[in-house]
Image 1 (tube, one colour):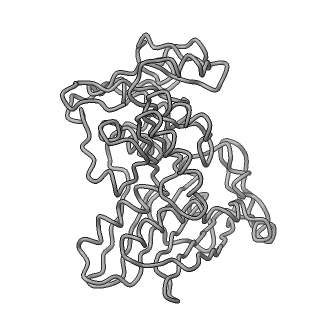
Image 2 (spheres, helix red, strand yellow):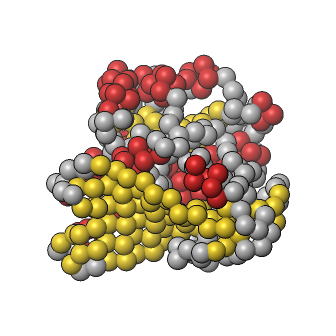
Image 3 (cartoon, helix red, strand yellow):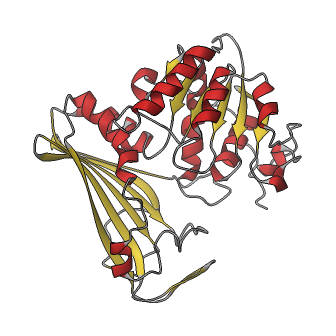
Amino acid sequence: MATSHAESTYRVIQWATGKVGRQAIRYFVENPAFDLVGVLVTNPDKVGKDAGGLADLPDTGVIATDDIDAIIALDADCVHFAPRGTLPDLDTVCRLLRSGKNVVTPMGPFFRTERTGEYLDTIEAACQAGGTSFHGSGLHPGYASDLLPLTLIRLMSRIERIHVYETVNFFAHPSNYIPALGFGRAPDDVLANPSRSPDTHHIYAQSMEMIAQTLGATITDITTTLELATATKDIAYPGGVVEAGTVAGQHYEWTAWADGAPLITFHGFWTMGDDIEPRFDCGDDSSYRVVIEGDPGLDLSLSRGIRSNDQDGNGALPWTGYIGANAIPDVCDAPPGVITHLELGIVRPRGLVRPASAPAVVR
C-alpha cells in the first residue's frame, strides 16, 4: 500500500519490543513523520501496557497486544518486524503483506542466494497479492556488510579484496546469552562445537552475493575459520564469571572466493574485554570497519559518537532499529515487491531534523 509523498505521516506498527523494538518505538513516537498505531508484544507481561511505558516514554495511548488478528486488522502503512531470531516467520510476514501492510525487518532476508531464493519467491508473491513491499534492513548482514562497502567502491579504481569487521565487547555490553555464546568454555570444546552454527555463513552470503554481483564477480565457495583467545584472569560480569584459561575471545572469518582467490572476508570478533590472550586488533567495543585492498586502498571505521541516545546500553544495537525505520517511507512509496538496497537506492529519511528529546529514564 503506497503512501503519497504529500502525506505528512506514515502509520506504523512495531512488532516485538525487545532491545531493537524499544529503540524503534522511541523513534516512531518522537519523529513527526510517523504515527505509531500498534504494538505487538510476545511477552504476556507486556500485554495491556502503553507503548510509551515499554520504551521509557510518556504514555502514547497505543496499547500493546499479543493479538495478531487485531494487528492485522489495523490500518497501517508499514510493520517494523523485529522479533528475536535469525529469519522472520514466513507465514506471518506474508500475512502482513497480503493485508496491505509493507514490511521492513532487520531479520532479512536481504538478498537472493541459493538458500534464500525460495523464501523470497514466497514473499514476492505475497507482495504482489497485497500491493505491498518488503525490505530486509539489517546492520550485519545488511548496512555495514553490503551497503557501506558498495558506497565506498565508487572511490576505487581497482579492487583486490574487501574486509568487513564487526566487534562486540560483551564485557562492556553484557548479555544473558554469554554462556550460550561459548564464553567460559574450554577452548578444545568450542573448537569442536562452535557457538555459531555451521550454517551462519549462509546468512552473511546474502551481503557477499550483493557485493559480488555488483562487481560482476561469481562466488564459488565460502570458507569459515575460527581463532580463540582465553582469559588471562577470572572475568566477572553481571551473570557470572569467565574463568581464567577459558574462552574469552572469538574471531570468526567467513571468506567468499572468486576466480580462485579470496574476494570478501567478514570478520566477527566477540570479546569479554581486554584481559584476553591473544589480544585481537579489532577496534572499539561495538564498531564496524571496512577495509578495501586495491587502488587506492580504503579504510573506514564506524563507531558510536560521544553523544548517544542508547538508553539500554546496547552498543550498536540502536542502529539496527534506525536503519529500518529510516527506510520505511521509501519502502512504502516503492512499487510492490521485494526491495533490496540495490532497488531502494539512496534512502531519504524523514523527520530527522527536530529538537532533541529529554533522555529517557531507564527502568
